Image 1 (tube, rainbow, N blue to C red):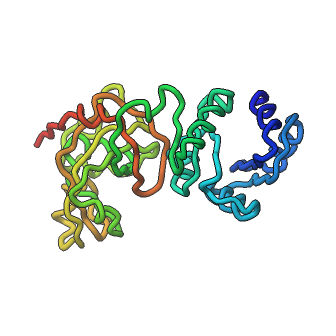
Image 2: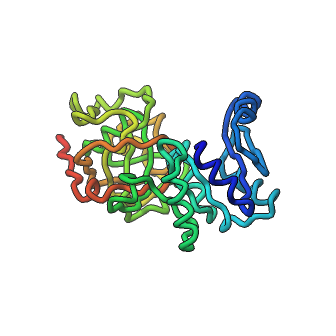
Length: 278
């Protein structure tokens, strides 16, 4: 980063802004004050969404998103910044090892070519391999495994979360938390909620086909398919089918709701169908 700051000093027409989601802003600002050769036109350090930082920087400096380049070490997922910034129209440069001269020049080269609203990945990063963009959901255990093993064929919620995704494949990430529910054992054999060898919490583990979402008429009938007791079933049920495990785990940061992920194409193409036992 020190080398890049020296290069910046030679560009008087370029304004520098600092954006950080630090939970300790005063401590972060004290560290920032010790950085030599940094002349920041705007400093936004506080908890929240990086998009909020960028909106305020744009407004304060009178700079359009299309004239901004973000250098950040967090690409996507719950704590990612590059993908979120790109969605605003900002050119985002992923710097997994921190900002260095290679990442700086890669960002400038892309900007000069007119690239906007994209993520410039580091060598060997996600964009260097073919990807397929798919919606994704993170499910707590044991439900993630029950679904991917083909035993859970109904996803229940108190809202119509999956209705917009009818007819599409959805990636299933194994959540970090457990749902305190063992009622699935009433209908399914031991091992039904086991992850495949090599998979663990925090991995995107496979895909399922999403079907129709409708208000449930009978909770008693829904319970075995949802792998949950009646009182834990939601108001709406979404049919899920054709569960397939990825050929290998893919680590993904947590996220709320349903988000789009750029999934390595070989994972989707190599997904293996589950063989549920009665």
